[in-house]
Length: 176
Image (cartoon, rainbow, N blue to C red; front, top):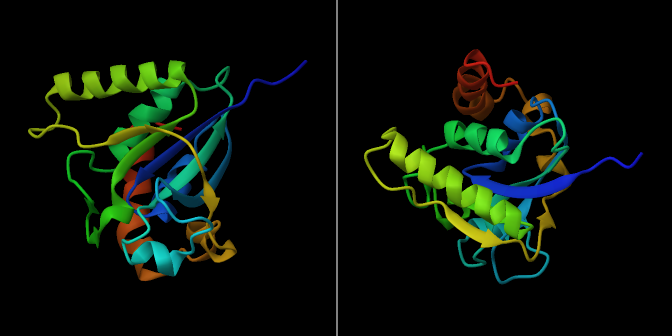
């Protein structure tokens, strides 16, 4: 029996945060930090940080839709970052930290549009959602030292101050 696996690429601030979040979600097969949405081939972290490549820090999520829906993954995404602030998440500022979703099928595009509509109609935010929604053309894996960052560096200040509270908030609300 062949397992059905889908891919979605999400950007919502520092990829360390989203990686830590989605690694804890049942039905997610793998999470990989990387770069997408820009005009430079094989970008590296230093180039992306200049803001001149057009790339965003993202995570490529491979998931089993028989175990978790794209709607659920998007609900977690909306809670894991601020989708109404352009090019900024907390103290992380720049186009590389923008809110963006790269879809891999027209079905995903439709589900994403519905999820954005639901979020805007919910009244949770007083500003409109600024998340970019684009087809996935390229994904460039991040350097190895970005992989499993939270798990390997839990005592680093960024992990303690930014990632840990986010994980506590998300997983207190029942998302797992």
